[in-house]
Length: 209
Image (cartoon, rainbow, N blue to C red; front, side, top):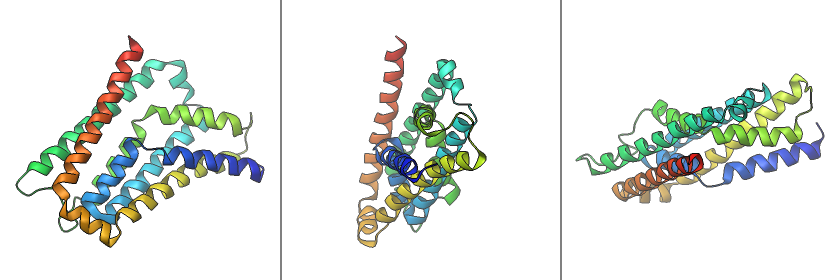
């Protein structure tokens, strides 16, 4: 692959990762309630999820989502329901006597990583994005090296962007403010995640009407 083509791929992957949405909200939430390590675990797991979709695209599996749109709708519905569930959990945690978890009493890192992975895997739009993107850069019969480069570029770009978000959210001054306003921030994220999930469900229902 030519360097100019790879730079174009890198730029599009970065723009896709930087676009605000459920993934950004989840990474920020995990950083707010679990600190930098939780945010990084969430970011790296999200990058893994993106890498899995990229690998599926190279293998031709994402064509199934184009061929059978019902499968994509099902994945999207599950993903939207998961966001609503995350929002409900955040709201109830903020209102509990112990309040939201802070960096002194944080959830296990695997929980933050699991949320990052699931929010990526339960987003079939990622597969369609990869299909549209890779169709511009993937030769008809790509070598293993080219396929690996495409997958690695998508996964690492996503992971590094959200890792940067987690690091910035974990800066001392920022994290101190997050801890002081923990309950309020947890409720804000609860409303945001629930709204995103309901909007996804509404779009899905309207598109099927």
